[in-house]
Image 1 (cartoon, rainbow, N blue to C red):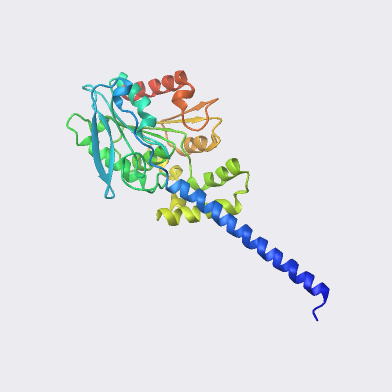
Image 2 (spheres, rainbow, N blue to C red):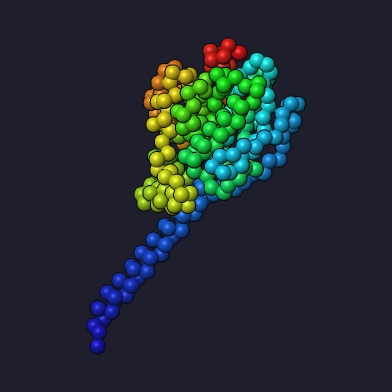
Length: 303
């Protein structure tokens, strides 16, 4: 007959093993859920148009990247004038940057704004946070400079959050781009996964952050761990760079902007918004945003 002590020890061991299985299973379930939410964002619908912002002259456009059709709007410049490619952030679409397009238009600029892969009306179901989206920005640039009214030496890239990461990575391969503006953009994706886990769940970065990266990379079939705009930002110089970030950003800490600024070559400008959180800098402090943008553009293009 089995001693009572042995029975108790076996029961305790069974309970501990069961708890471990539950904990491990729950950890895998939670982290895979986070990963899927990151790499498979919902396609938010396009519910308005440039006409709703008083823009009279514009047209729907399409171009391809990696076999995917990307869709957007093109607003030709007043002649002669620079043109900007506006790139939205994660889980958003071109509507998020439409107010900026209207602001550029009032200065006489042309604008191309489009939905990144896996967003809005563009093809694809996966997002790689700027890793493969670099090809989307390259495709947008190549489409834009093929338009007869466009001067390739007067094109500007402007991205927000994930769009900023894609813009930095694309600008490193586009020496003719005249300038680069990024808002609320991360320095490396890997570091911010850990910060995001801590900030939004209260859970420790380990083991959750590595598992989110693991599942995200396998779902997206891309090496997201190598998504490091801080490595490419050095290649933007000597073209002027403007970095803007909210000091109260809970998703991408303001230190991201400081690290990007430190890594970039001259000429460069860093503007911090004291009360802004993640993205929405234009809406948070219109005066500071417009003042910073106007100073940058007047130095760059004289208009």
